[in-house]
Length: 88
Image 1 (spheres, rainbow, N blue to C red):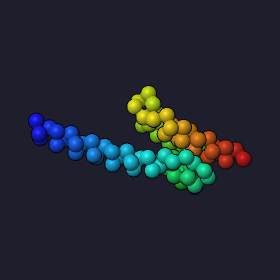
Image 2 (tube, rainbow, N blue to C red):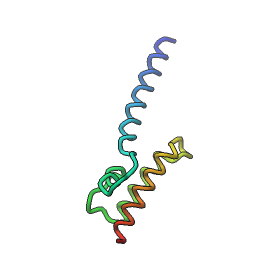
Image 3 (cartoon, rainbow, N blue to C red):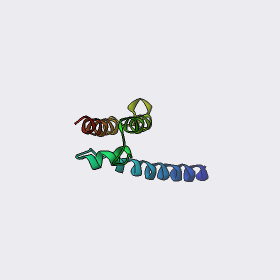
Image 4 (cartoon, rainbow, N blue to C red):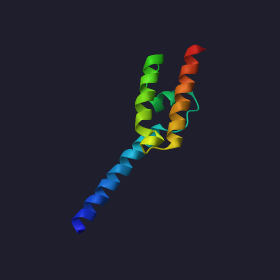
């Protein structure tokens, strides 16, 4: 029983560390650089690359899949900002 509890604690700690790394990317975008960092795209990314990155991230953090609404909002805001910059 003690071994099982120990393994559960290790798994929980690793999960929290992994989520923390993802949370760093999910801060609200204030400028184009932050938005690109959130989506993980380069400065020369086009519309399709931005949309593909958005879809990939939303699949990970969507509330229907156990993610948070806040993370979804930030990812959507980053996509909207970058797509808006392309049309300007």
